[in-house]
Image (cartoon, rainbow, N blue to C red; front, side, top):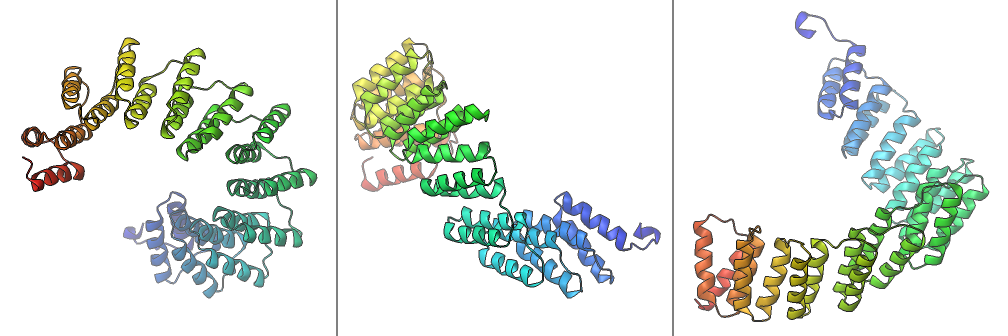
Length: 411
């Protein structure tokens, strides 16, 4: 267009900037804005809003603020949409001081915040765990005659549940129903999760029943699995077991992933009898154990030094037709080396190779480390040299093991 001598005007630039912005090409949009202003043309408020939104979406709220300031300097009065865009950008980047300053400026300039603006502020403080500030914004919202919506309550309830403030969350839940706002799936799921994580399983079960009576989809097995996994990793396996029992009570069928998670949880706290009990329950429920199930149990056995029990389980695994993977063999190799059973470990390693199981650097690290710890440094050096000839890529652990061995002069 420009090459043919046609001079772009405001409409042309506004269309180009808007198009680049909504397609996420903020760099091109910014360059186009600079070109436009260098020609003495002024972008309209919609175009500036589009570019600001694109910049904020890409974590560049400071640059969006520059456009906002430029708009006002040129006599354009930002509307509530412009303010909302920049407030949202500040909120996402946790620039809370900038956010609240802009909010105050907005009110000073005579623009009355609506529900969407208040929700931005409430959400920003809630995500940061600053619930006192979130509640102050919530109070101001009501003082100004702006009615909270389901999103406002959902945000507050979810944050309160995350922080363990279940009583406050339930108060907000009751309040929203009193004012005629029906809680949806998100609100119920937040409350159920909060109750599960913080031990109020009676209330969790009541909420699930309430959901079912109202025709609201109840939490699914993936939802409960996530909670069980988190609790197990925190060592709170008894809480995880209680939620597992709740899952069965409400009619959900645990899958192999949840069974494996619970087995791992018991293994992490050293309760192998309980872990084996979960394996029995798994088989009784008609859920077939997989390679992850057995690898998890193997890991727990060998970490506790119960080598023979681990080897017996490995034999059972073969008998049931479950093919071990690299992780299963690595657990056995590590356990045997740590128990000083070097010959048995070397035999398992050869078995692994003959079975065409993938041998990676983590496997070689176990072998090299095990040989060095068990006074077989010469074999470790020999294996290391072979790996070098094979162009195997080592990691820092490999090099540390071999340097330490050579430094001690054990070769």
